[in-house]
Amino acid sequence: MNVAIYAVAHMFVDCACAFAMYGAFMGWQNAHIWILVYNYCAFALQMPLGALVDGLRHRGKECSREFALAGVILTGVGIFTHPAVLGIGNALFHVGGGVGCMLEDERHGRQGKDFGVFVAPGALGLFLGMKLATGFGTPNNWMYLLVCVALGLSMITICWMVQSEWQKADAVEAPAKRHLPMVLMLCFLVVGIRSYVGLNSTFAWNKTTALALIATLAIAAGKAGGGFARAKLGTGLMAVVTLIPAAVCFGFGHLAVMGILALFLFQMTMPVTLYLPTVWLPKWKGLIFGLMTFALFLGYLPRYLHATAPETWILGVAASLISLLMILIMEGIGNVD
Amino acid sequence: MLINLMRTMGIALLMTLVVELFVILLLTKESERKAVTWLVFLLANLLTNPAAVYLATIGHSYLTFLPDLVIQIPIEIAVVIVEWIVYKGYLSRPLLCAIAANLCSWGVGIMYNRLF
Image (cartoon, rainbow over all chains, first blue to last red; front, side):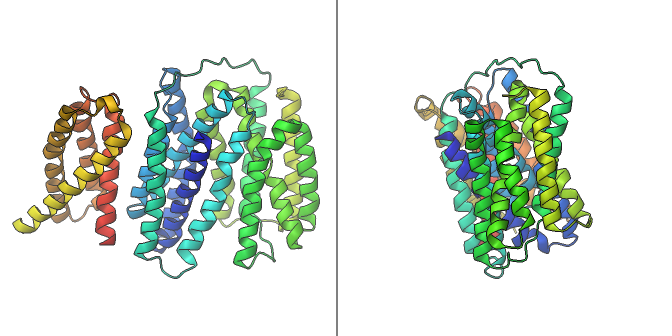
């Protein structure tokens, strides 16, 4: 139940952020700076905030829900004030919701299934927010009210979760892992590559709203399905059966069906890269979540700096195979399953 | 000017009381919702809200070189600290209640100014 609440709230928060960025802040003077400020606050700040959540957990205060609540409220404030406020709200929500879902997943022994369920609706929220901001002319007051009502509902449901008692921090000891820095770095690289590919993939067929929506749903379904597939197949097999077909589909990405399938399969490794580090470092879930979102931020920078990207099919094929290699090395030397 | 300021302060106080009451209701347990808690809540807001609105209005009028946000954030932090201290003896999670309630009322205030 809690994971479902976080997932829906995730969609609303990301929708609100995309709506405010595309509908209001893009029109500001020096918009490119504010976009960077927003992305920095939303992604890079998750690392220190994650460390803070972990620190509080180690002192016996599990406060991920409180972070998520503050994030939702600050996102609402940010829509009407400043991209930095919006970004901080987004970061607080993601850290709170992410750690909350990781703890739920661990408590119920769901082996990472909940990670995908939490992360997947974000893509849909971004799509909806962007469409709301740009698809119907200039955003009007009713649209702002609609977004605020969605955030208000999220706030009320998270308050309901907060109502239950603070839970004691789980005292899980980190299992001794060989080559930990190496496997963490590989995981970080896989996330960065996925972010870079996601932002630089352009398909000729992706011109209509319907196809854009289907592509977004495929990404969301891939993220959600990845957690379940990993729990069923194990990390290595799951990476092989998703990333090799993803590489083939990227090769034929000029066809809409193959492109959509490529996006679906490529995104399925997302919960894996979120789940594995938490197995290696169970006491530092917040920091791990923040570290991986920092990789997302680094993957976004080349596009911000207008670096030329290779053609989508070359990028997709290469990224799929390199990611596969890295995940197999991670599994081998990290002994993760 | 004075009448306008009084009107602004009255609307702000009313909206703050409604919004913060709602948030505190959501975040407190049945056992905490006593008459004395609501009295403390009312007094805390009577203490902080008019002062905060007055300072923000004066700041907006005289410190024109500063963005509103730069004036409002320190004022809101001060309000949260005061309410946190006041709620300490009456609520089980005073800091959370103070932060959530004030962020909400601040957000609703900004939304009100932006939309109406």
